[in-house]
Amino acid sequence: MDARQMKIKAAEAALAHVESGMRLGIGTGSTAEEFVRLLAEKVAGGLKVEGVPTSERTARLCLELGVPLKSLDELPELDLTIDGADEVDGALRLIKGGGGALLREKIVAAASTRMIVIADESKVVDTLGAFPLPIEVNPFGLVSTRLKIEQAASRLGLSGPLTLRQSAGENFMTDGGHFILDASFGRIPDAEALAAELYAIPGVVEHGLFINMASLAIIAGPAGARTLQPKNI
Image (tube, rainbow, N blue to C red; front, side, top):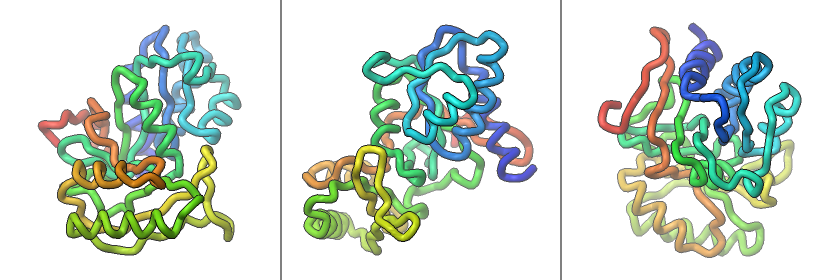
């Protein structure tokens, strides 16, 4: 089973949690896009759902495939969000934002009664941090914000380069008009402490640590998909 087939398996398992009439948060990234394709088939067959996309990229795919969409202002409370992750640990803490949509992803997840994470087994880790942590920042005062992040990391014993994300030779811009600093800290033994430090920095708009947000993770491997609770990863 190749990487795409594993993503499809995870998406199929997540689709079993979707019921007609649901208000869905729809994630961003390659695994979430497999979910959108499968969801579109169900919608074409009569499944009634309304989706709130977490990015312009996801919105375009949903519209192309016929998945009905609303804005989060129109549907401010959601039943379920299904999204991918760049890393997931034993407490279902996540690193997200590899696709650049972390702010909207977190807003949509917070508006949902439940969040299900779908990923392949390579994303499961003992300790977060091998994947660089995306930190969404305001372009104004970028140098000062970067310095504050470095100082905060140092207080927690973390170090490593903060790389301003690029795309096509220019600074990557999120859907919200912000930049992303990818923090290569390595192991993050206390994700909660780092999250609190980052939130205290005015120039930080959001960060990719999703803590106490996912209620379930569906992880696909060569043998198929397995469902994980925080206690049994």
